[in-house]
Structure formats: structure tokens, C-alpha cells
Image 1 (cartoon, rainbow, N blue to C red):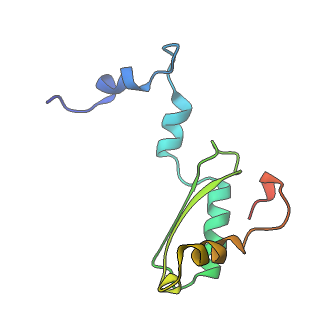
Image 2: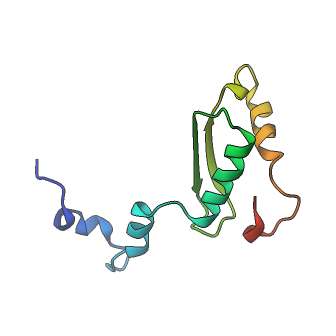
Length: 101
């Protein structure tokens, strides 16, 4: 099996027109976005006993939708819907994507 390297990955890193998909590569190796950091900070304040908090912007970077994973004793013996309610109550009432969380 050949070793993985930039040359072997080149065919995989091209868009439908054969152009490099550099923005995807940048996001793959970039640190958290400003929105992800903001949401993470809010969650850390709300769930101080959490052992793990992972926030990922799944809306292409605009901050409209996040995937959130939290490991905390606070969720123990709570149904999934109750866990979701605990997190969703942190969201602001307004719908402006820039002001989410």
C-alpha cells in the first residue's frame, strides 16, 4: 500500500471541474471558527462539569447550524429530549445567524 501524501491525495482534492478544493482543505486543518469558539465558551459556562465539549459549524462557516457534542454528568439519567432542551434553552430568541448564541 502506498504512503499517503499530497501527490496521492491530489485527485481526491479536486472539485467537479478539476479545480483544487482549497477552502475545504483550509477548513479541515483550521482551528475553530469565531462562532464555534463563542458557542463553546457559552456551553463551558453553562456546563462547568462537562468532561468534553465539541462544537462544529455544519453550515459551511456562516454559523447558521452547529453540531454540538457534550459529555457531562448533568445529562446522566435524563432523556434525550431533556438533554436537548437543556442545550436549546441557551439559544437567543432572535433568528439572526450572526448573533446565534
